[in-house]
Each structure stands twice: as C-alpha cells, then as structure tokens.
Image 1 (tube, rainbow, N blue to C red):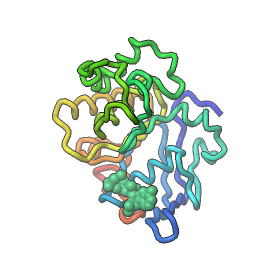
Image 2 (cartoon, protein in one colour):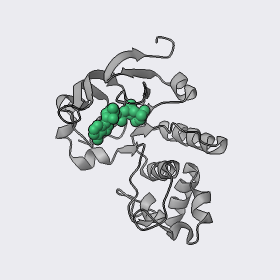
Image 3 (cartoon, protein in one colour):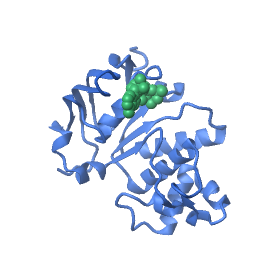
Image 4 (cartoon, rainbow, N blue to C red):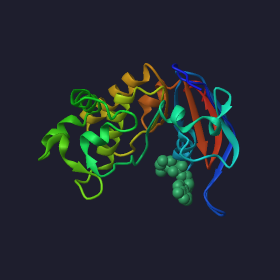
Length: 231
Ligand code: ATP
Ligand code: MG
C-alpha cells in the first residue's frame, strides 16, 4: 500500500498499558484527516508521548487499533509506513557516527553533502555542526560528542527535511529555547507541514491556537477533542 498524499489516520479504541500496574492509555478514539494540523495537549504524564509512540508504529496498541486508510497499521509493511513518517520524539535516537550520517538515515543515505547541509540549515543545526572541530564529520552518539535534547530534536528535524514525510509526529520541547531557535523550529515545522499531516504534542499557545484539531488528554483518557474555539 503506497500513498503519495498523507493517509487518513484513526485511533479506534486504542489502549496501551505499561506493565501490569503501570500507566494506562484508555481506549482512545479519534480520526485525523489528511493534512490536518493536530495538537495533543494535557498535563505531564497524561499520555501524550504514548499516543505518538502508538501513531509512529514503534509500539502497538494492546486493545483496539491504529488505522491507516482504514487498514490496521499492523498490516502495513514496515517500509511503506516508516518511509512516510518522521517522528521527532522527546529524545530522538542518535547513533554512533558523524553528524552527516545521522542526518542522512532511513532511505536518505544517497543524499549529497549539499542536501544534508541545506536540511541542517533549515533545522537550525548547521551553525552548531560547523562550530565543532570536525564540522559535519564530527562523531556524535555513543563514544562521540554528546548532544543536548534540543540539539537531538533539531537533528531529527533535519532528517525530516531530507525525507519529505507525509506524516510528522512532533513532541514539542517543553523547556525554554532561545528565541532564535524557537523561531527556526516554528518555521521549519510550518514548512514541513505544507505537504504533511502534522500531529504535535503541543506546549506553545501558538501551536495550540493554530491547530485544526486539539486532543485534550487527562489521566490517559481523551477528555475532549475539537478546535481552540470549541474547547
Ligand atoms: P510529558 O508531558 O511529561 O512528556 P506525557 O503526557 O508525554 O508527559 P507519557 O510519556 O505518555 O506522558 O507517559 C504517560 C505515563 O506513562 C507517565 O506516568 C509515565 O511515567 C508512564 N510511562 C511512560 N513510559 C513508560 C515506560 N516505558 N514504562 C513505564 N511507564 C512509562
Ligand atoms: Mg511526553
């Protein structure tokens, strides 16, 4: 199953529980149309990132299902799904390798140095890369130079610029970014969103106000869904 425009995504009574006694995300049902800019809001620990994990396909619901174009996500091949999704999680994965290699992952190994640097610029990570001893060849990840959470997120956004996904899952940073970085992030997500469905775990009023669908989570339940004006 291959689609070029974003697929419709639904959660159909999707539930997920961490262990026997752990937190439970309870029977979430919602429908997200192609190109929707959606925001997930709720207190810390309400289950926001857990929903993104389910939508990304990295974990599967234990009850109910995630539907993509009406078909269970589990029936899609990993390739056909992961090729279209960029997940900018709270702690993006950085593997041991150069910055260049870390940006050009997941089917983008053929990207040219120019394309990689362009993506890095759009994601606001170019200046940092250039300031390091070995520039874009600097080793990061295990055994290499450490990156902050925000820097890892920008690395993940640079990956997204190369990938041109039709679905973007973005766990917006909570902590104080400097104004310039904040503006770069906002601009880059906006640019990526022109071609994609974007589902953002939102902390910024700006993101929430501009969302076409807000999902409000409370203690693992979907308390309300609608626009800013409706809620
Ligand atoms: P925040 O705004 O702080 O990022 P969140 O709404 O994203 O919070 P989740 O990360 O979805 O919250 O976590 C929901 C609950 O599940 C929390 O109580 C958390 O401690 C718990 N939890 C998350 N990941 C795991 C895990 N791997 N094992 C056990 N419990 C977990
Ligand atoms: Mg979270």
